[in-house]
Image (cartoon, rainbow, N blue to C red; front, side, top):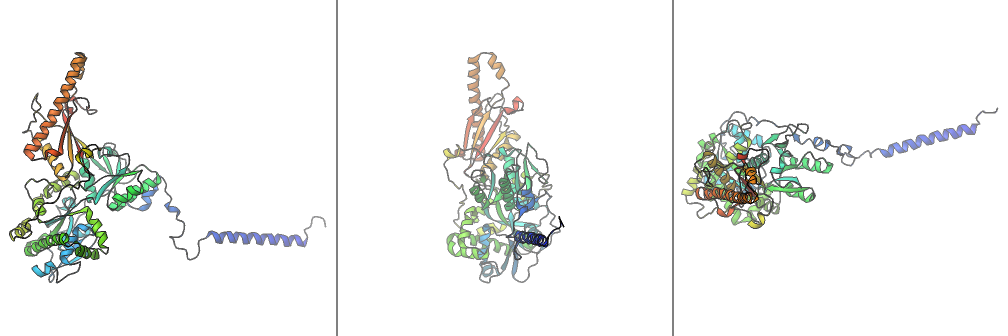
Length: 561
């Protein structure tokens, strides 16, 4: 019958159907990963960046918090002859390891041979837990920095017997290439680990530049155009990673990161056209590592604490005398190579006995003291964070260092701490200043002489000296300025008269800057070589200010970095 399908037609249809099924099965099985594929070999579409995703997906951002509560204090009880000590893997703790001959209790250690006790040293990165442990009496000794101690001091029952080192390049601030000073961070956002040396580092420099900071709760928190905005991460390395992710994605919301070596060099090397190392702490001596000892234990066992201090100083001396042997000991403890430890120690200045005496002295010196750093941290964090600042003299016990001096040990040691120079003064002053601060000095009426008895002037002078001490090798350029309230009047009296007054204004403003310099030298023993002056007259008034507010001295800090 016409129109009826033939048997061969059905056969052909069946063949086509099975062919299509087979092709579909082939495509399906070849699109799947092999049965033994691991997640690392599969394509991960979750890592493809979007405008806000790069930082959130890492889980590295943390909301701003208050200082953690450490719990009630207790007294460490010595079990047998071995003390429990907790440190992190920072190379500045090397003298302690050298004196102990490693991490484990050692009967041949300096501590055991002379003072009859041993150390069991544990390496941990859980800093908050370490402070809780030493405060509660679970451990006898731990390590921290002066700035972090200032945060927790009102909770801690500890004493500080010795400084271990200064960080000299281990901390740094990475920024986008167009940012050349701290002042240019105004209104920008940086990533940083909260309540760490990095946090203090940026707060200190912001304060010196006359800027405040705003802690952010997250990416959606509105930024403040008048402050440096801080976005927090769990660690300093995370801060760098979050910043790098924004570079990769093209997101410009984050302008930089405060981080640690080796990120401070690796990131600018990887992104040379996008990132600069704005500054490190190589010549900003504001991160100082110290030992803290459980207060109850120290009171019961002062001889052991003296032995601990003496052994650390011996370890520091041995590292200078016999670096090859001591580097091997430290490398083994940190499970790395001597070459790696040698490289890491380039970012560290180990403090000897003479430098410790100066560091804990109340006498003014040419380098920063424990007191200088401690109060710098208190002021940088402010009362919003440090509500009850413990006086530093309640924390420090200088007795052990003084007894060691009476014993005649370490005679002839000198203070070797100084600037790490890589350029001459003329070259440095040609660079962009790291920061600029405006200071309102008061002068005698109708005079260029500084009113030296004025309390505001005295505090400003002290602040400048602290800045000089904490930044060895830096230079201050002080620019004098006058108010411009009479400029219109002078112009009305003719061009010649106006020009004479303009020249006189420059001369007068320089004399005022010179007067500040002279008082810094005479009263505070400032190094004259590190101070330069200029007069700018009335030509550079601050925008939005009253005329009398421009009777000021502008201070520019130039560093060796």
